[in-house]
Image (cartoon, rainbow, N blue to C red):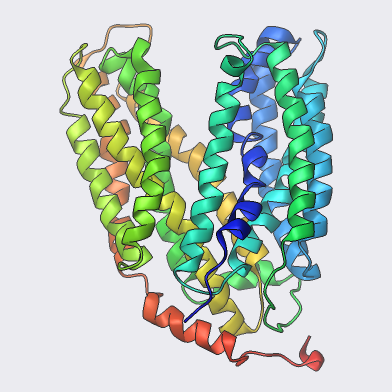
Length: 444
């Protein structure tokens, strides 16, 4: 019987994700309008900086994953990343009125680097806290829940400071101070108090492991293709959600009333999913949840526009949020299981590279999925400044629901047929526990 990871250890580990989750995604949502209003940065400059940052992430993610695996100890990288992030977030969130594109570009890139230096090693540690199939779900749960709390705290900061809903310079300064202090402190606390269990004795990771992993690691291409299809689908839904709800359903003023139940449902569903995962394999439940997403999307496009659409849309998106919550729980856990496959089959522990691949795919999916979703209604003649034609409505429905459903159908098949189930993983964990993959120093 595998030993359960104590809850206090999971909280100590997961707390790092609270300030970490306040940096990138919420920042990307708030920063464009903030800089355009309070600095000399133009919309075009903001778009350029965002694009350059995405390319920068694409380069640094796998490199940092490789470095984290190459040198073994992940904690020093996290300390460096936390200190870099603290400096960068303070500068980025407190521009002067004459700060321009160069200022924004420099500090945004430095923040992206600092964030990655913390995120990739932290994700890799999540796979090393336990080699048990079910315990990995618990680890993922606490990390995701505390990360979600960080995102909610970010968006609630103006209200907590009595500033209404405005992210003005004073709110951003307080946010920067909170992140700049809490992230290094929590990383140092984790490094001090968290002791990882003994890890298998593996061969040293080398530069060519980055491309070679796609060939040498069983099941990796299967999982990545499944995740790409899923991410493109959810990226299209998230990219078109506000447009669909406001332009077609005429619920523009009620968007927060829809998004809040959706976000709460996503977080609150995770403990319930954890209980189901005690009996059902991760990949099978993920496949079933994707079928549920298809059903929800097909129901949404039957909702007629007008005020009466609000209640139906709130319930539908709350259901969709709960289904997305499952994917947020199982994907890191499934990737952790692949780390064990790598250890047994290749004698290498490459959790850093694996989670770097996942981070890169997630970022690509968000951008490409949303872009394709928005292109479809545009191709059908949609224009936000004109009255909706029948063709434009068709385009909105195809982009928001039709295209995602087409992606989710093959994703369901791939997820259902994923070979690494509970029994197969139990054999891997047993071999690791018995030391059946130990590699001699001469092979390192």
